[in-house]
Length: 245
Image 1 (cartoon, rainbow, N blue to C red):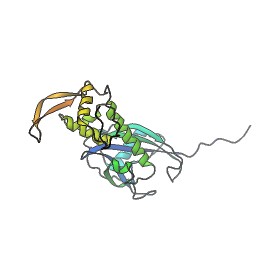
Image 2 (image 1 turned 60 degrees about the vertical axis):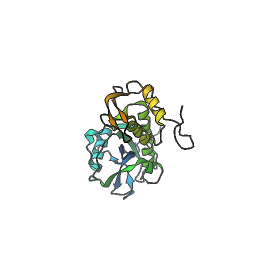
Image 3 (image 1 turned 90 degrees about the horizontal axis):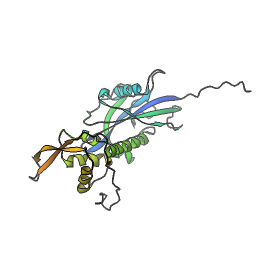
């Protein structure tokens, strides 16, 4: 029998945050400029290490968000997105990160906190395309966060939160197009909306559109989960638009 005593490996635990919102009809992600090495000066997700063994992951996520961006963390509902544990993901050693996701409307301009040189909203398409390079494996984490957001719009009434108290079908379609990253055929979109009971209801009033024709107004319905879901169309037409069905 071996006398060798087992010693636990040296592993650091961290949190990263994917905060998404709509700005100027485009999906944006919150990024910070790293103020320290490694990757000093590079764009990255807000995040950091747990401070001590008694700190929970969720508490650490809220703390890091407040420290690096000065956002009001009480207004955000964070959910776990995934665990990222590739051995070479951090040059400082073996670091396992638990990523959290929040999707919220009308988030303010961030202010860099004590742990970041700057904090800004950046269009997610710049990250997904590789135009904007991120530190560590944060592009992969953003990609997973955007995909989770797109799936949420399929199965929940989240899109209505990005509209006003009353809105037009076009307003709602703009949200789906921004998050899904594709143009939608208005007729097909409205047909799918009508099939989903409890998603939206007529608001009982109308307003003049730019053409002079009245546009029907709607409000969010009582349903949080959509059935049937608003499934994303296959983007396989020559002009990139959804095919009529």
